Structures are given as structure tokens and as C-alpha cells.
Length: 469
Image (cartoon, rainbow, N blue to C red; front, side, top):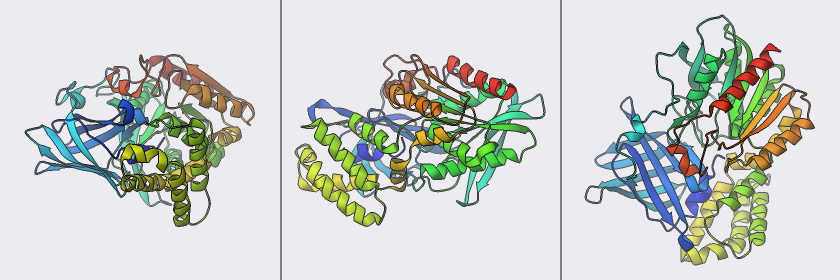
């Protein structure tokens, strides 16, 4: 989910990395105790003369982070991720063919040298269009659109597609998942939402997809936003579609975090949302999801799994408290110093580095997004939904495991208000609904498939069945 990067960064105090040249994929490996490695991936592209970067940390289950600006001047690479609370500055060393600099998150800085991924050519990432990506001219209308979230004082920019034949169409709003996304949800070289929108529009379904606030052509501060704020943006997207004379009914399709935003918006807007689809969405309370992530992505051993889990549970409990955030930080710091510092200090080598790491952990725990997420339980929203619901997850999804989350969603729907729902686990598919082999995040970009055709057919067929019933 969003902001998981905080945990990864602050634990990487001792770090060395690999890389090369400006356009393409750059990597850095971090080796921790007992040979455990963490890889940073910087995917640098050039579009319309401007540079852009996507940051991913596969081992931490973080993908598709979109810093707002990338520049390369006088041999210095600057990745401005102030919208995400991160940044990178590195000078190019021509003899070593690497960028040498520092990665920053909040007040924390760590040395980071970047070398090109030797398995890819200079322009391969930029030019390697995946087989499913549609090519213009499209057999349907496509227009750039913009609408406002007046309450947040931001503009949201996107693309609306509709069939050429006909006057009114069922429409869907696509809701993105982890990290600040562009309208195509471009992650690991795949344009997931472009492929999904193309498929649905060819089936007679209009689609609105838009850049997340603070990303692409949308304004606003992504880093300061919560799941509730993103839900407000989706509401404005629905309101925009309601004003169009070429739209009949409106549904929502959310991927990953978008899957937990969809039921919230449906409940807020009541009869204005005709149906919702959750793609790889979570079904349990945010505090429990955060705990599972903290355990699963931890890159170091602990003396006692039970003691570590109890320490993280208490940390989340403290961070979730109402009241003065500065006082919460003090209490959380004291808790981490008693429980986590003794584990980190032997690995980090000094009290100073341990204190710096603890400070970063505390800041990550008390961001607006984190504090909102801990208390958010999508199951409660799914229970209240009255419109038809489709929930699908891949059986090989290691980010949002179906045996935990899809089961919880199904239970909520069975005990809820809607009488029309379908829950299905799709065999052999990962978090992005790709047929996978290892099914690890490091494999995503290597796969040719962007969105499995069986999954696309299930989505479109279900929508058409709902609107025609």
C-alpha cells in the first residue's frame, strides 16, 4: 500500500548500489545482515522533452512511486519526490559509469550510487511497448479532460474514451492503487489502465481514467493526502461524468488501494454509483494489513517473532491515538527505543545511526495517510454497499494475498446489504493480473502480458450483464 517505502528507507542505513546512463533502468543493491539484499529500481524515461522517473523497491513490495520532477543538469541527476516525501541527488562519475549521491526521505539521507541495469539497453525501457498496449488511431473516441475537486482546490486531469457508435454509454471510473499514479497506472513498464480502458471501450463501455493528485497533469499534494482524500477525488470524477450527456450509468473499478476506495465512494454517493469492481483489493483493517506488511518485508532476523509482532502492534496502537501528533511521536520514540533499537543497533553499528533510523520509523508511522489507514476497515464499507459488486484477486498475488483479503471481502458481502455480488480467485495471476512464473515483484517488468485476457473478459462480461439485467 502507499507509504510502505518509509519502512524500507529507514532500515537501509548501510548501503551500496549498482547503475549506468540516464534514459533507462538504474539499479542499486543494498546488502544487509546475513546476505539479505534490497534493490532500488529507478526507471527513467523521456517524454515530450521532459524526464520522468518511477521508483520501485521490489523486495519491499513497493512499486510505481512517481516523483514529481526529474532533471539532469551539469552531470547531476535530481529526482524531486517532494510529493512523496523523498528525493535523490547524484553526480555522474564517467569513469565508473555511475551516479554517486544520496537518497533522502524526510530528514534521513543515505548514500546511494546508481548503475544501469546491465540486462537492458539504453532505450529499451522507453521504447519497449508491451504487446497489449493499443496503438493509435484507436477504433473509438479518446479525449483529454479535466475536472476540479473544489473542496481541495485541485485540478484533476485525465482521459475519457467512448465507442464511436451510439449516443449514451455505461461508464466506469478507474481508481489507481499503490503510489502516485498517472492515468495509465504505468508500473514496471506496463500501462495497466491503458490496456484495461482500451479493452472495455472496445466492448461498448466508456472509461474515465485520471492522474492522481500531484502526478502527471493533476495538481495537489499527493504526500499530504489520505485514502479519504483520494475518495473525494473519485467522487469528483463521478460528478464530472454525471454532467456529460453521453453517459448513462456509472460504475467504479479500483485496483489495490483503489479497491478499498471504491466501496467508500459507492456508500457516500449512494444511488449515483451503479456497481463497483475490486481488483486485488484489501478486505481487512488497515492496522492488520500494516502489521502483515511489517512482518513480511522485514529484511533482518529477530530473536523472537512473537515479541517483534507485539512490538509492532503496540507501535501501531500508539500511532493511531487521537491527539497531539508531537506527543504521540515522543511516546512512539520511547517505545521503539525499548523494543526495536536493541534489534537494530548490532546491525547498524552505532547509537547515532539507530536513533536516526528510529526517528524515520516514527515519522513514517504518523503521516496523515498512515494514521487514517490504520483505522480504515474496507470490510465495513463492503457490508454497507447496496449496488452490485465484483471482487477478483489473483491466486499468486503476494502483495494482497487472496486467502486473506478476498476471503474477508466475501464474508463482508455475505453479511452485507447487496444481494448481487460475485467473488472469484483467478488462478496463476499476480497482483497486476498477469500470468506469472516466480510471481515475485521483480518479475513484473519481464512479463509481456500486461493484463490477462481472461480477467479482462470477466470484468467486461460482468459489467454488461449488470447493466443489461
